[in-house]
Structure formats: structure tokens, C-alpha cells
Length: 208
Image 1 (spheres, helix red, strand yellow):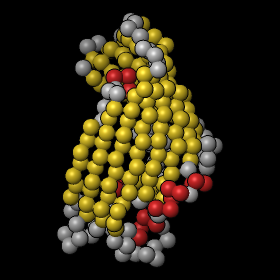
Image 2 (cartoon, rainbow, N blue to C red):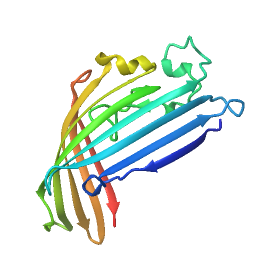
Image 3 (spheres, helix red, strand yellow):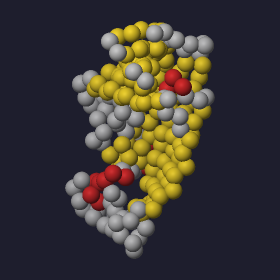
Image 4 (tube, rainbow, N blue to C red):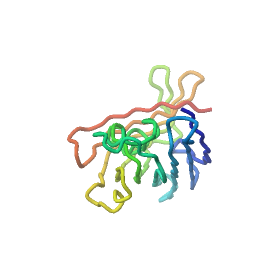
């Protein structure tokens, strides 16, 4: 089941230290005759930071992905994902920690588009708030909003009723524990369509 892929990436990771612009693109191929997969997948993501003041900024992202081609060996399969010669892990997802944060990541499709917007404003910067063995040095509050759509046809993009709005409140903080440095971020988010629950996410990343 070989999969050949080519990826071109340029994407800052940590919001408080992001550059003004980032771009990520990827192409993945499943070659017929070498295994059971046969598809061509393209995707890209753009990121832009807008400085509103010297301490407050807005970060917007746009992600779009499409399977330009895929063999359909099982057109009568009841579940759409079972119709394609595509591994489950390669389908697009509109939810999860890196996409629409109020959605779970169990929705998949062959066509995907979403955008997210995060407004960062500081609680404290360049400080040293010591709690037990930790030194909290900065803290940003985050107002988050996003919207996206996902499906198995290019008509997904023009079906405005399929778009899911998403909103939430979060934080991102730089903390030192002993000699180690971390970015700690968390968010409470809720999709405003198709769900009634709030999703909580927490992330810890180390840095030097």
C-alpha cells in the first residue's frame, strides 16, 4: 500500500512568536499498480498576523484541501469514505485542535475549506509570577472565531448551509519550570451548529 508524497512547508507554530506571514502546501499521491490506493491530494494553508497595537494582534488562517482524483472501487458502499481508494488517515478533517476547535475530528471528506481568526491581547508580559516551581512570564487571552465546511463533492463549497461557525475563548502563556521553557495554551470552544457542548483543549509545547 505505498503512498508517495511531496510536501512544501513554511509555517510558524507558536502564536505569540509567529511571523507576519506563513504558507504551507502539500501534495500526496497514491500510485495505481503499486498498491490498493489511487488518488491525488492537494492542500494549502496560509497564515497572516495583523498587529493592531504593539501588544495586541490578530492572526487569521485559511486552509483548503481537495482530492483532484480518486478511484472509486466501491460506489455502492453505504459510508462515503468506503467508496474511495483513499486511506482513512488521508481524508480531510474540519475539526480538531488545529482546525475548528469546537468540533471533534470525526468528520471527514474529500473537499475541505475553513478559516480561523484569533485576537490576542495580553494580561501580563515580561513578568515573573512564581507558582511553586514555575515562573509564568507572559499570558495572552484569546478571542477565537472560525467557520468551515467539509464534504465529498466540489458542490460543498457553494452550499452555504453546510458551513459550520465556531467560537471560543482561550489563552496562551510562556512558563519556565526549572530550566525548561514551555508554551501552554488552552481554549473553550463551541460549534454553533450541530452540537450543544463546549469542547476544552489544552496544549503544551517546549521551546528554547
